[in-house]
Length: 235
Ligand code: ATP
Image (cartoon, rainbow, N blue to C red; front, top):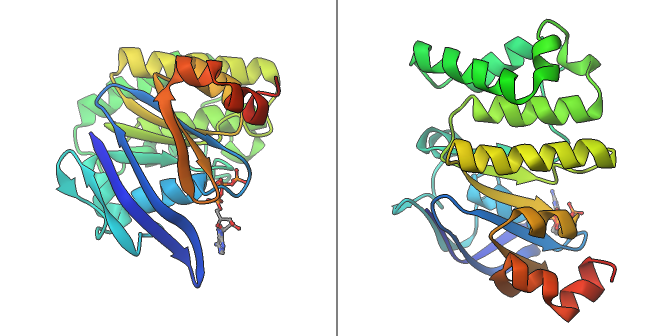
């Protein structure tokens, strides 16, 4: 579904990505783990065209997207839930969800998907008329994921969905990630510092250090890998 081929991405003179190569197959949950500043967010930003790579190529379902605008990339079916959520604080929960579907014209499908996400997160159904900015951190994360689902993406990019949330809420969100993947057949690329949880939900994973990929394997093998255990799992 997605092929990233040797991309190099810069912020001015600072090289954040030093040749990243990875692939994501249809229906997979792939995780990218690594320490602070390794370049995980930049990888997502390069895929969705916010910080385009200076060199290298990215193909989405065979189409080159490394020179496309973010709007075109979204229209092809890639949707990102950014770190920090970025919901619209002054809009209600329902309005936030409707904003997620702004590129769609299939009104019947939008209605069905609205019902689906409210069913997925019953707390959002209860709070559908409440302003987004008044929700708790966990509820805002649920809203951000739901809003992205309203775009009906083929590939969902999740940046640190566990950040700043209580363990019980994190558990809930990871169960939903698994559900979205199995029920909606949405392919998921999950960036996480919580490597333990991310590797438990993912099929395969990549480990990133200092702008490069240092390991690529099945999630089960990475969970068992002594270096990964020491550096990222606190074991
Ligand atoms: P974290 O887990 O802390 O979010 P990360 O793995 O997502 O980290 P990135 O945010 O991609 O890492 O950052 C990779 C490198 O690029 C870091 O050295 C960071 O300081 C640098 N960087 C990120 N954003 C910018 C920016 N807007 N301007 C300059 N440098 C940046």
